[in-house]
Image 1 (cartoon, rainbow, N blue to C red):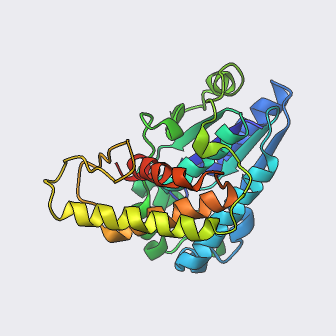
Image 2 (image 1 turned 90 degrees about the vertical axis):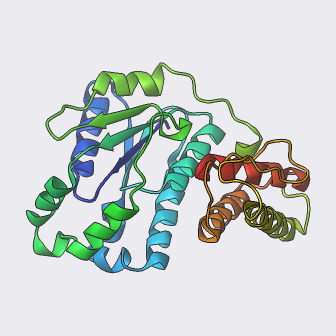
Length: 276
């Protein structure tokens, strides 16, 4: 199924836009549409979940698993969630490439205080607390149409009608991005693959941290054994690299590569994409 990723601040009208798009595709284009909704998993515990990084990570994992289960080339999957992490949106993009299907992003572009006002109009049990709301806004990594995983992107203001025909064209009249090595599922031929994955990504991380101590900020970094240079443009922290490493390991466990020697190059490419 072609994938529509909805993204926006909490209480920015994401579910409303999801239902509008679903209605159009079903009634006007006779398509089958499946919605994977964050709200179905959050229930009444949203403030507790978004206050605990482990629970929040579990929710993201469950949403992605549902999307992966439904993806194919014919019908449509809409992921109705904040999708505020750039690396997470990249993982969804890779999943679309692997399934050789198209994807687009709908950005619900709402001013922060307007979203907060809409939040206060909800039933009390469905509202975000101010602390949780502000935390989600602060962590929100705004989509950028120049990033291939956020493109094509359709920004929808509160007063706008979603560009239904353009959405349909992006899903059904455009070719899906061609798969590459990083998005191809390969057989796990080595029993020590996980060991190699952990060791290789740790070696690259250590190399980057060490190189940043001597190079001028903005200079490119060469990782031994990798042709592609790291072009980060800034000094990245160990915490950022560790987070990227965890995300890469999590994805690669599900999509192992046959040649473990390529792991180093793939991780460098991933760091360039998510942190560059």
